[in-house]
Length: 372
Ligand code: PMP
Image 1 (cartoon, rainbow, N blue to C red):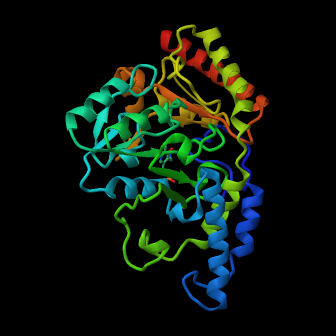
Image 2 (tube, protein in one colour; image 1 turned 90 degrees about the vertical axis):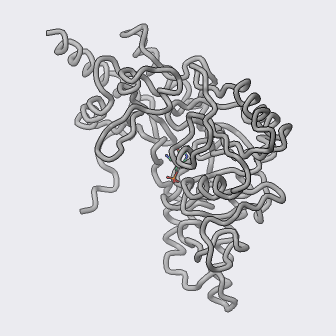
Image 3 (cartoon, rainbow, N blue to C red; image 1 turned 120 degrees about the horizontal axis):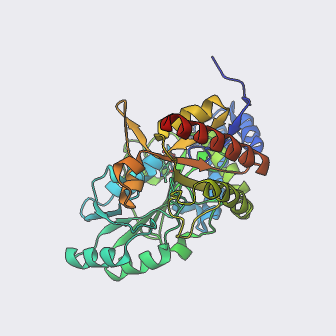
């Protein structure tokens, strides 16, 4: 059963995925029945090739690189895997707050401080201790807290030690302005569905002369860097979405997020807002919901018509505390209460205010109940 295209209720989970933009949907519909394999040399193949390459150029422009640097993948997960498995001879260092699709590659973890910022001294020490070049992976915008890492500073440290820097930028477009060169990244991960594009397509952007070992081998597509016929409809949507990213979007969201935080603080002046003292984007806020586990809060808000996220992750049926909250020093009990509210292009101030009222009323009732 397909749920209605625009279900009633308020969507405040833009860090999980974003609404497909109308322009993107239209571009995808236009190429849905375009016949041709982009690798075929005949007219039909060339037609499909043309739309794929137009999309590649658009994604490349969004990262400030030339089109030959962009490798389309099935999403940020595959892009991260390609980067991190791509240099088997290099030891791997990753920040402790990376997405699971980075952490799974078992790099040594560099700690973050209580604000959620990577410990630069610890990173420097580990690079020295290794005594040889490493592959380091640090995200720009954290998907749980919205905290922004000082990537250019990190890049300098990594390069001085002769290493390579991979940057997961899945949550960055429209929230921070960046280019591959400005960051100093050697490899950069992007995902279409975080920017109003479709799920199931992303890209790994390669610095000059950087060639990871392919994760998916077979046909020679994409210069042998990623085998498999390109997801033509998906990459067209990605290209269109990349061209529509509005660098001013996040500035509009800052006062909305601050309004919500002020409401929470007015009620609980000690409410724990993750990364409150670090540079953060406007779109994301995570906080420890007083006196209720995150999944209880998420279900209660869902019943009240608000879709929000839990900081904790569900694995094999068991909810475990968020590794990001734990890395920032929260104990398991507090980490299990972390919920995430994430705003985006379609979010209005009224929606955030209604959410604040509903959440606070619910939390008060819950607290009252707990006392009785
Ligand atoms: N990295 C980050 C920072 C993310 O937020 C996400 C999505 N939650 C991913 C990687 C995985 O992206 P995808 O769904 O495109 O595989």
